[in-house]
Image 1 (cartoon, rainbow, N blue to C red):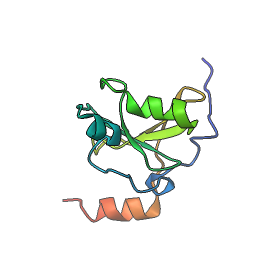
Image 2: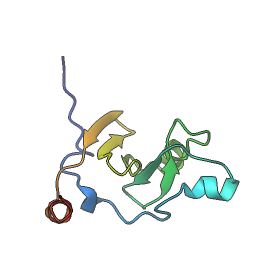
Image 3: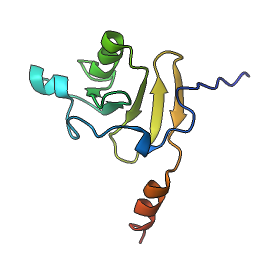
Length: 108
């Protein structure tokens, strides 16, 4: 089995992504009045689009329109994976010091 390493995804953490333009909603679904299943955040510009299980598939449409290759999941909140559209490879967010500190502050 061959393992593919995508340089677009190496070393990404939560801090590698800009703040989401619409943190709790797909901005295109809001404009169209449609519903979404889960949300994805563009690494390049902070666009929030819906997943491919949603009717609009706005995250994928955003990639095709802009060429921005990398997204991360933002819902559900416990999900920490990334995706490269160019290489069709998934990755996992690396811990970032501020992320670790934040998580440690909320342990019970």
